[in-house]
Structures are given as C-alpha cells and as structure tokens.
Length: 432
Image (cartoon, rainbow, N blue to C red; front, top):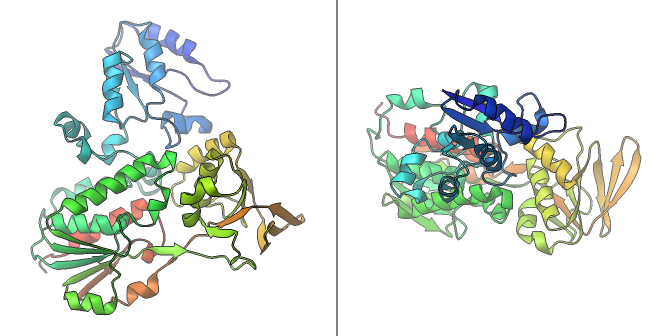
C-alpha cells in the first residue's frame, strides 16, 4: 500500500513541513510506502508546485521527502520535476529518498527508465514541464504531450502499420519542430527523405530561446531532435538551403511536406521602424545588451515569457496589452505557473492599453482613462506570428503530394506542430 501526502501545502493558510512530518508519523508502519508530494489541489496558486512548472528547479520537492525520511522507518518516495538521471541517482545515493517516482516524464517518454538503465541517456526525452498534457486532457479528453506525438493516441496506433506500404521520396522544407518530426517519422516509415533548412542549423524560430533558464529542456529537445536527424541514414540534410519552386521541381520528389513556419507580425504603429524597436525573436539573444527599460507590446505567451527572462537580467519590463487578458496560446494550465512568476518577479502588465506612437523615449498609448506614456530604451513587439503562406503555397504544385503543417498554416504551439507532423508522415505511403 502506497500513500501519497503533501509534505507541505506550500501556501499561507496551509499546513507546513511540521504537519507533513506529523502525518507521515501516523502512517509509519501502516503503509508500505509514503509518497511525498507537495501543494493542494484546491488552491490555484500551488498547482504549479504539485505539478512543477518549468520555472521551478529540478527536484524542487525533494527536500520535503528528505525531511520526512528522517522521522519514519517506512520507505519514502519523492516526486516532482524529475527528468535528470544524474539528479535521480544522487537522490537515492544520498538517502534523501528511497524511491523516485515519475509522472509527466513517462508521458514524454514511456521508455525513459529502460533507456537510462541500459545506458542510452542521450536518447531519453526530457519532460519540458509545459503542462500541455494536463491542458489537453481537460480540453480534449486526451493527454497530448508536446514532444511525444504518440501520447493520447496509443489505441489509434496499436494496430497501425509500422512501415509504409509504398516507399516514397519525401522533401521536407523547413527544419523547425514540425519539419524535424516529419522527417524522422517519414524515415521510420521507410521513406527516403531530403530535409532542407534555410539557416545554418536545425531548430527553427525556437532557437532564439536557447539561453532562457526555464527553457533548458526545450533546448535539450531541439538538440536531441537535430542529432537524430543528422545521424539518420535515411535523411539527407541540406542546411543553408532555401527551397524555391524551381529547386523543388528539380528534386523530383513524390511528396513535399512544407513546414516553413511564420515570421513575427509587425504592429501597424507609427515609429515601429525606429532603431530602438525589435521583435521578440531578435530580443531574446540580446537580453543582456538591451537598455535598462524595456516595453513589450503584447501579453501573449511570447511577450510574457520574454518579460520574465529580461527581468532575470535586471531589466525594468512593462508589457502593454490592447485586450483585457493574457493569451494562454491554447495551454491554460501553463498560465498558472506564469501567474506565480509574474507576481514573484514583479512583471508589470497593463491591459486595455493601445500603443499609438513609438518614439526614441518610449511608447505613447491610449487607454480608457486617457492618454499615457511609458519610457523605454527598447520597444519589443510580441504581437503574434504571420504564416509564411505565400512561400509555402508556391511549392504546392512541385510534387504529386503536398502537405502543409505547423506555423505556416496557423501559428500554434509545439504540441500542434509535432502531432500534425507525426500523423501526416505516418499517412504517407498508404496502399490505396
């Protein structure tokens, strides 16, 4: 019998570790395992502690299990933000817990324990703690993982062919999240793949976030996928290669999968072309070089996460949003972790605030209460993405079969890109 408890409820008014120890003592000798978690399901502010968000450190709840273990003889398990094999080994070796337990990590990679046990750590996917699985479960009824497109589709795939009946030559245009997944899945199904990427490395637009502390597992995933592509003998990788209709026709592919992505949408605001204005994609790599005051236009996930990142570099950040709310990008539970970080880091967000003029000194705005002005050394726009639809559709007649996926169709998220790429690739070569 395993009993799960919260070592601490982690909020004002909830019980703390002393009460957690007292509960564990009452269970001591009456259970086979005391499973120590944290938080309280009824309190929104600690949801992202019970289910640690990407903003918390690895193994953030281990200290609770370690403290309780000092007071009981029953074996103790720990859980929460565990995806680093070395950390898990250290927890066991140091005696902080007797068992480490995994939840979302096993959705990201059901074979994670076996890969670690057999010395294939480099092939183990690491949960990004983006909470796509929980949000999808509550929205769609299935726990779709952002980086494991098979999750939530196990029954559908149980009797699906493991190899395409008709092998084809597939051209994948774009080496972002969707393009890499499409190429790898096509290769696994037995197709010959050519993957073309216009930049010097794979990863797409998300590469701009590689130095963001709370996105380290995203960077790990992109590097891991890129390595898989580079080592796959069925994939011919062509970097720094822009695919034109003429180039595509010369390759004489049976199938073209277009995953060209999108570009940052530029708000139609006077002064948007000023030297002190840049896109979020441009701002991420320059975080430490930006001036002390930064104004961000747009309170979507991109703008908010960028703001939190810039605060880490000591910037004074203000976000201006035209509507009355933050956009969750289709992942509403991730917002719970964001709300906590917004309060913790002091990120300022002003709603019902429309930028009407950008100057060298800042941003002039219109609000229901009247005009206002926000000083800024740099102004960053994070007002959504514009699909590269014209460049994409230009390739539509360059092969007998043509598919579009990812942001070049409609800008969404990693979950949508990987799942669409995976299912599209699996359906190529069916014998009909």
